[in-house]
Image (cartoon, rainbow, N blue to C red; front, side, top):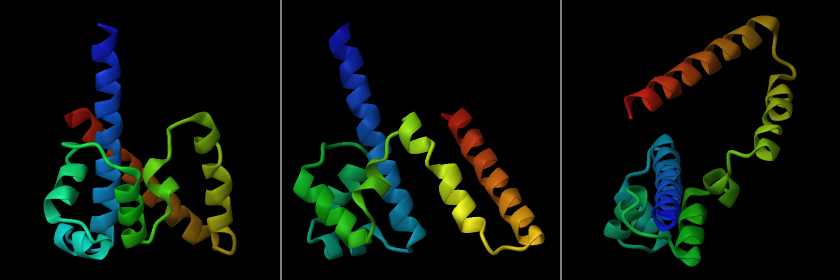
Length: 124
C-alpha cells in the first residue's frame, strides 16, 4: 500500500513538472519541436516529459530550463508555505508605480486567472 502512495506522489510530481514546462513553452509561443531543438533533445523526449511518461535526468531538465530561459525554480517551485508566502511581496513590488485604476485592473485579471485555474482543477 505504501509503495502505491509513493508511486502516486512521484507521478503527480512529474505531471506537475511536465505541465509547468508546457505552460512556459506555450506562453513563449514555442512548439515542442522548437524546444527540442533549442535544448538539443529529441521531440519524443520533450513530449514524454510534458506528458509525465518518463522521469527527467537532471541534465535534461537543465537543458530545458536553459532553452526556455527560465530558472529551475520557475519549473520546480513547491507549493510550500515558504514559497507561497513570498508572492504577496512580489505582487506588491509589481504594483508599485501603478495608478489605482491600473491596480484594480490587475486585481481583476488575477481573480479571473485564479477562477480559471479553479475551474480547470474541478474538471480533473
